[in-house]
Amino acid sequence: GAGVSQSPRYKVAKRGQDVALRCDPISGHVSLFWYQQALGQGPEFLTYFQNEAQLDKSGLPSDRFFAERPEGSVSTLKIQRTQQEDSAVYLCASSSGQPNTEAFFGQGTRLTVV
Amino acid sequence: GNSVTQMEGPVTLSEEAFLTINCTYTATGYPSLFWYVQYPGEGLQLLLKATKADDKGSNKGFEATYRKETTSFHLEKGSVQVSDSAVYFCALTRPNSGGSNYKLTFGKGTLLTVNP
Picture: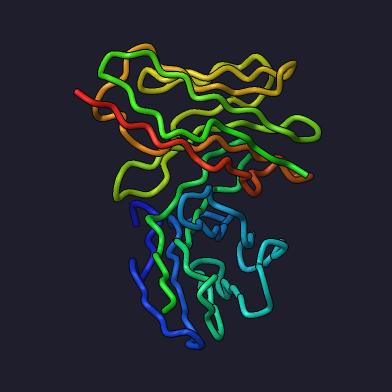
């Protein structure tokens, strides 16, 4: 597609519910990133994929967070047993992986845990 | 570790006023520096970037110069427009050993409102 697409745009989950957030990167982009943006804050890194390999998951806040990119294209961020502190906008970005090239961001998924 | 500190705002200006949003960073080595903009209801967009010391990034009338001696990358525009109203994020990235773009470290963002 023309840009990075994320779905759903909005998600309301009851505390304890599992959620899955989807990211469709720009076709052919090798690198894929997930970020978490709390209200009034800058995005914070969660995890990074190069093709299907998850090379860095140091930003995942707990073992309730899990991300995958099994075929090196679409990625899913899963949050198990959601908590109120998980409420945030989850951003996906992709890039070609070439040095100093731009990362393109999706519009994000706004997750509200009630 | 890497960090970015930017003027938090909010900043409110009249149209045609001069804009400066300060940004300083802490990083080892030679990071690449970016300004991203988030317009209301839209995703983050790259505004400009600089990849080495003394480089000047520019786009849409905005400019920022990579100052290694002061570890700064301040955003400036000589004459703002109402359409520039948005949240601006300063960010840096360190390339991995292969030189590919890697994770971005963002500042907290600065909300700019330009009134007619």
